Image: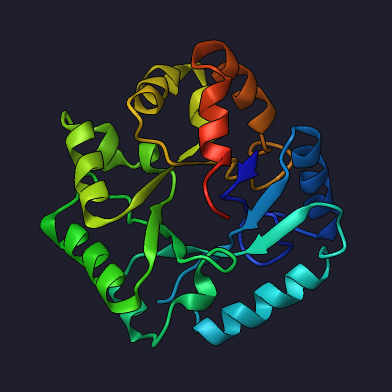
Length: 226
């Protein structure tokens, strides 16, 4: 399993508070069958310079880089006009890919401006946005045309990431299963933050997928390029 969305790097955002917690989260993921982890701390370009973020990310990674699990650096980049002040977004992409984990402002409704900004990110920076936890945005949850919104994102050139918790949680399991069976989920992430109320639950996710959908779905996700 590949975990594309985590907040494990210690002390850099609202994720792991220290090195010990970060290593415990990595241990949990390894026990749950994860073989590749993307380390994707929040990047808010309207609050922090890119150079400062990259320096802090590297310092945090140095504290856990010896852990016996394959890890790649990335970010969960917040979509805002300030983002376009940067010459390049390459350092924010996941590993050596063009995939940029993109967080959309959580509004009750996405306007045409939202989609235009995503398109601008793609055209200006030649990246492939992966929309973070796409099923959790209020604009998606409140909409009667969820699949049309998914299609609009896909038509722009986006990929869609879902959180494992959305399937594990019985309250959201039905809609998440429908999304997966409909072929809308390109990537899975634990979006883990800590050991208490937001631990990784990839193991539980796998069991539900095997039962409700089948192992072939896991094979499809794991076949995606790193």
